[in-house]
Length: 227
Figure 1 (cartoon, one colour):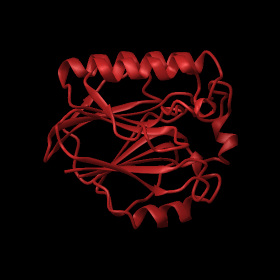
Figure 2: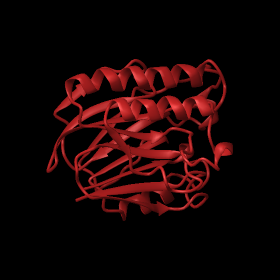
Figure 3: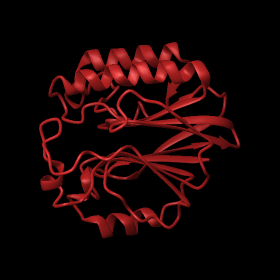
């Protein structure tokens, strides 16, 4: 099973059609896009959005309609080859999305999110960290097989502090992962702030980059294979 994530930066760098063409060539079971617009990816049968950012108004310091030249903004989208069997409530449904899927490794909950939608700008970054922690702790009480995935704006490598929102964010997330018995499969990828955190299933997990930074956006695209 392959699970991937990419922050496409609203498709501002390369445009919608080029990103669609590239992602349609990839073979993933799940693909999570952040800072996304609605893409037509024919290799996925199902598509689930977080609630769209309100249009034609300033929302959390930015008029997204103007910024994206009329495109509707979604902070998180889950593309899947299989249908979701359950949706979980989240604190901020414009930023995060939590869905349960039946897989060969059991029923897994994919929690897609962004921490730092405006990078270090407060109160948004503080709220998003707190919301993530609250959501994941609550979801884990129902199903501990939780995958946290998306743009955390945090490098977990000790010598890459410049790539992180703050040391507090890193420490808070590491504590969350430990408490929920989760493993950060992507923590050792250098100069990387997007992550895939998985339950400790005692499976073999490989993590790789499928698109380098500045090819489609200003983020690396990552995927994990679970065997």
